[in-house]
Image 1 (tube, rainbow, N blue to C red):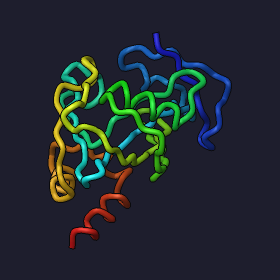
Image 2: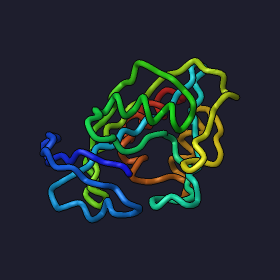
Image 3: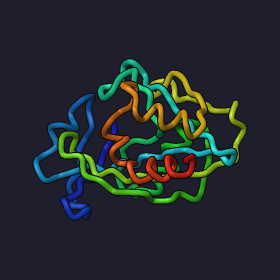
Length: 173
């Protein structure tokens, strides 16, 4: 059982609690949101981590994504959630997260905190969470942009990181 705090449009906890069940996030009451942390991982060598979502996921099954992340548990803040989700989904431990953007996603009733984390880990030591992801790969800046512009990308995620992708694009010109 997974419990979430609910937030209002100002990003404040309402005191309401939501019990998540498969696919029921779309049933969260209008004007209420659950907190999500999304983490784009950049290795110190400049490459970026892509992961492939498990085919049984209720949202974007089988899609590749340029981030790890997920919903905050009851009482958890954005960075605390980011640390936990990054470790659960990749085996990477990190402490310094750079907040890039916050965005509301009305369709999924999500308040998304978008982070970039720069890591210095063994690139072959990624540990995938069995029910979350099935594959991973590291891509350079050009590969990241090619991914972001492809049909394989989760477009809502690409939109949330638009400014970051623009910075990457400008750095390779």
